[in-house]
Length: 104
Image 1 (cartoon, helix red, strand yellow):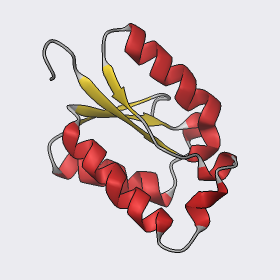
Image 2 (cartoon, one colour):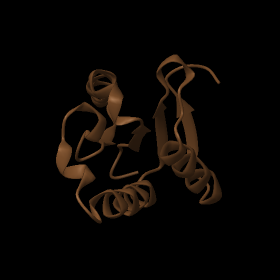
Image 3 (cartoon, one colour):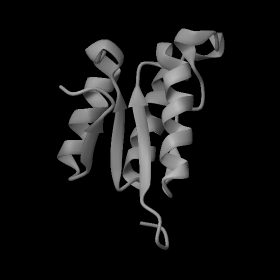
């Protein structure tokens, strides 16, 4: 918590950019501080695929999880890829609450 606000980090495939934006808006309006991804590699931000960048972003996202009270997984159609699976495991291992867009 920061002040009276819960901090939530969004996780999920960057192919779901529209859903990331919708969830970010909804959670913010509910009174949460929302941390999201910086780039949407699967939605056109091709800089992600330059050498070393994806690894840096993956590590950075784990630091975003460190800063959060919980994570919110954007799992459209039940899809959870390997990076997101790793983030869920990391969140669970560090005692963070994990919530999902769609029931698992």
